[in-house]
Image (cartoon, rainbow, N blue to C red):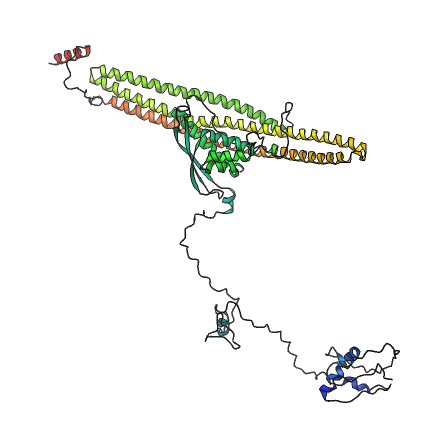
Length: 575
């Protein structure tokens, strides 16, 4: 019977060896394991894989004599090939594997100038050529040269790019001018031209112009208040039914509207409002507003952000301020409003006095002119007529100064009186948010009471209980939203009031400086006129300083008035 553990000769064909392995229990010589041939080296590994023992015969363990040898460099030891004799020269490190050279997609078709063999294509960027023909070692590979961009002949209408700071804080310069009256007797009104220059990318063009009337400005104010609760929106001037077409009133309103728009556009929150963009840019403003109202039918009746949350807005009992900071600001604003109203009243009195002085100077000038025409002596009639013209100049100076006082200082006082009203409106919005918060809390308590009753009844009212649980969750959501809105509105109003104080100091400082400069210029002009008149009076040697030859009408019949008789007597005496 063949021994399953016997060695089988493998690979002898490759070495032209036909020797067979003995089948007896005696093993081969020990030196056969160290034969340098390839077949003897692979015999132990192939023996295990090719000749497996039969499951029908029992295994027989035969002791094999083993010969131990020292292992130096060959990790396989005696099983490996014979190691060469050690030499003094160190072994060279193994060569790394070479990367297969693949043709680049950017290479051009092969031509007469090719680098190397094997059909390698030439690099269009001449990188390999430089490396081959340059003797000096090159540093990091330089990127291929990029041709400069050529200016395009196509003109685009896009705005130039701006920095991140300018994009976050765009600038606006708004001019309101060209007021003119339009309409018939029943629908007459003043239309203003609103011209805007801005760096904001939200607008189609950097400069544009639209036409607006007063009620459009009023719509913008009310809309911004509804969209931004807690923000102090710059208000427009008050409406006036009598004298609204007078030149002084139209100019004062134009200046106030221009200041309103510039302050609104400079506000960090209001400048991003979509309704401000609609007001400044829309060519068909009335149609766009009607379309907006159709999309939002409750826009006019909306209470702002509170109603969007489904929170009822109502006024409960009298509001008692719990925050001392807001209480002190409210008291301060009331006192400031009273002081500004008193200052405006005094300003109006001063302007009225300047206008009265201008009117009195005009009447005085007319009387002097009449006296100069009656006076017969040219040495007296000349100075009287010159004094009459000086009074006309004084009248013009008083009128101009009164108008400048209104436009420089009076408009600032009126603006801040209206701004205080806007701040109070923000206070009222905060009170409504407080009422809404407590109203939502009381509604939540009612829902929880109903929930507790259903829970005590057991599972008999399961459907009703599920409904009440949903109502309680919705009420809790409304309470959370109302509380967050009230707190956010408080933080926003603190920042708005600080901004109000800073702008108030700057505006009043600028207004007072302009008021004083205009007053000094007016007084300098009056002083110059009076000094000129006095210099003419002092020139007694020159009798023709004030003399003006009388205008004689041709073919005028001799009169019989007292003046004619006096002149005839003077002529007779001179003869």
